[in-house]
Image 1 (cartoon, rainbow, N blue to C red):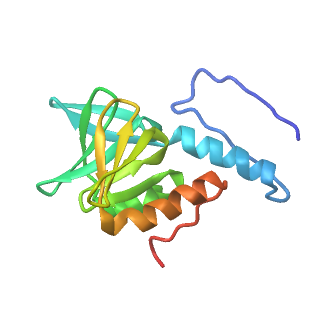
Image 2 (image 1 turned 30 degrees about the horizontal axis):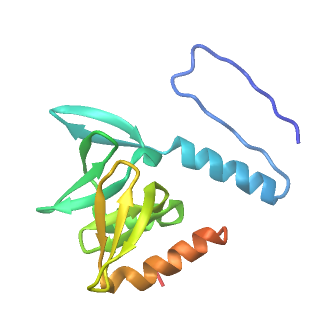
Length: 157
């Protein structure tokens, strides 16, 4: 594989073009990496707009029909519905864990089983998120798929 790199100071936006004859595992891996690291979202916090990366999101939560993205130290309001977020980012590690929360599984530090058959996820930033019983089976299947190296989009099936 040949790689060319060009620097152009007058570009309005950075871009990457990938040309291939056949979409091999190597090409697919490169494309996945680029998509994962280039996804940007826009939200509002304290009256200002904030551009942030999808990989910085710990979880999305809906409160009073408003959706928020929880980052390490900030909470940002976004103009997307939970269902749209779940459909768009399922394959990137985001799964619904209760009626109002979609969790980034790559931000989980520890899982703890509770007496009432629920599970609590301790996140890297110290927050705790409850995984309800009705979402537990799908969550466990999702984690198993992630551990085995592949996640299939089951949100529309």
